Image 1 (cartoon, rainbow, N blue to C red):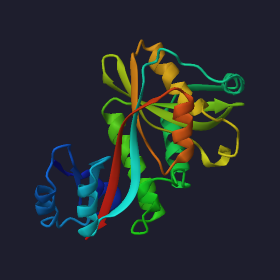
Image 2 (image 1 turned 120 degrees about the vertical axis):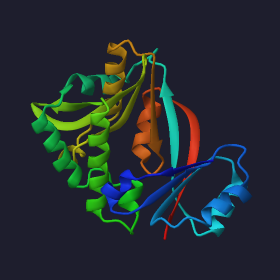
Image 3 (image 1 turned 90 degrees about the vertical axis):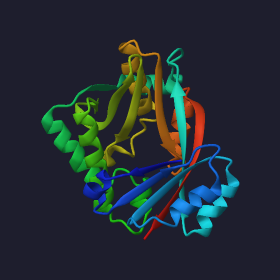
Image 4 (image 1 turned 180 degrees about the vertical axis):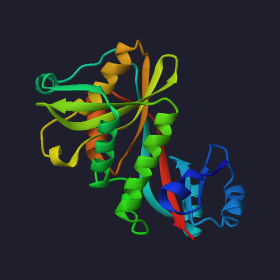
Length: 240
C-alpha cells in the first residue's frame, strides 16, 4: 500500500487530496485502519482487479466506485491501420506546438473536451475544476520534458497529443484528443495511431499508457491499434 499526498490537486481542484494505491498482498484490515484516519477533502483509492474483499471494505467505509482504468502497452512491432483508417490517416498530419498553440489547447480543454474524465463526472466538482486539472497536469508534465503536438486537418488544428519519454526506448502518450468542434468528424483511431508513429520514429520499443472504461471509444480504438492489456485497476473516491 502506498499513501500519496496529491498536493498538486490543491492547485488544480482547490481541495486537499490523498491517493492510496493498493498492492497485491495488502491486508484489508491494514488498509481500513489507514482509511479511518484520513481527513483530506478528496480521497482516491486504486485497487487491482480481483481484490473483491478490498472492494467491499472500501464501499463499507463510504467510498464510491467511479471508473476502471486499464494499463495498455504496444511493442511497436506491427503498427498498422485498417484500409479505411489508412485513407483517413493520410489527410491528417501532426507537428510540435508553439506557445500560441498551447494557449489554444487550453481554450479547447475549457470547452469540455474530456467529458468522460472522473473529475468531470463527479458532481462534487465543476466543469471548470475538471478543465483546470488537465491544464495543471499538462503544464507540470511539460516542465518535466514532455512534448506537445497538434493534429492538422485541412490546415485546421483539430486535436493534440502529448508524448513523455519514460525510459530510453519507452514512451507514454499520456493524453490525446480531438477538439470539440471536430469530434463529429470521422477521425477514428488515427489520433491513437500518430503517437505510435512518433515513438517508432524515435526508435522506441514500447508505448505504455492508461485508458478509462468510462471512455468506450478510447478503449475500442486502442484495441484497434494493437494495444495489449496489462493491468486493470478499480478506482473509488470519497469526499470528506
